[in-house]
Image (tube, rainbow, N blue to C red):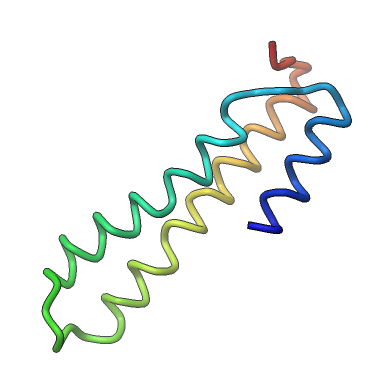
Length: 81
């Protein structure tokens, strides 16, 4: 939560208030739950790599989405409105 708060502080200071700031990290728990249920099927004997994938893929997807949005904002000059 502190990591999101620090990132959001920079967004607010720059005046770039955007709904994507909250939507990107809020999608990670949903993706994590969906991956865990679909890959490991909630079984207690699930292989380690399935559980690790369910825990690592959501933060990495948020990182990719955040970097992509940042590059669009900085390189292309797209402003949040």
